[in-house]
Length: 396
Image (tube, rainbow, N blue to C red; front, side):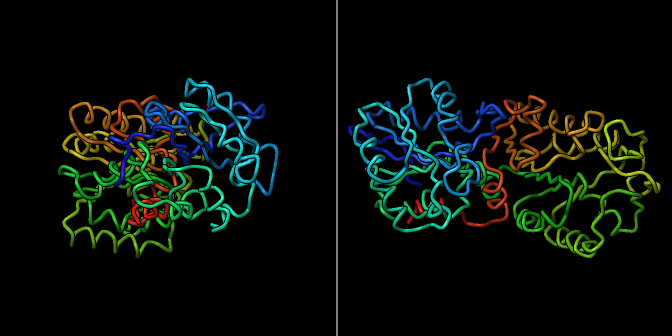
């Protein structure tokens, strides 16, 4: 990787592709600035090395120029988070953008308008990418959350800079190294934890992880497909009958690869998919009709804690219960606490993929993990073993 470490950017205009696709409320107030905060290290480094930073980002999925998707709505939060004044340009290409970029002084920061206001961005249009590239002397990609998109500003733009003029940002570097630690370089035993509702949505990840981990915990709604495949009774629990044969195949593959798969032994079942549903503890193989598995049971949590404790590298992708309902969040909280305890004792822990990231944030566990990924889709594709276009483009 061509990283920023040791580089100087005196009097250079540096294009930094960031992922400022942050959530906002009805008043256009940013409700979570994590992604902005995550880019701060890269931006600070370049500015402190004498550079002038031009920020490119997408925001939402606009159809043409839609005012509600303007990056000007987040300008105040960007400035507050970065603790620096930030200029704004209402274009990202064209004469106005060129003038704004050339007017930047040393140590100054410019946020360009949403690149997705131009359909050429998502099309990966070559001319549009070249126009973006013309804004600066150097290109830095720090948008891991968009690295799986072969878009103009994330991938195509890189070909207009030779290898010595394009870099991995600090965030992108950390994300890549964290994934590599789990999939290639992790201390053994390596543990994968997969949660979520459906086996069908995790097939490529399961297949890839069987070559990377020593042990695999399967939790969440996926469990009931595995249980039913082995002859268990799952009541009204979510179950993909069409994937029962696949589940058996996975168990067989794991045995062949000497990967130990851990399934829950008991479950907290509810008589309705609701927070206030009546509860009862059931053996995982005997859930009565009219009841559905909603969370891991007490014996399971005791068992899983032992598995987590002995692991030296942990990947957590997906909660093990319906954590959105407080009455069924105990399992996910307990699992998170066990991973945090292991991390404190020296285990490397990576949390990646939408709901598991949401869970560690909700229960204030994010600072107790080794690394919490900022990229949902990009992280999932990395775990599937895919090469991300935005990363490949930096190495050519």
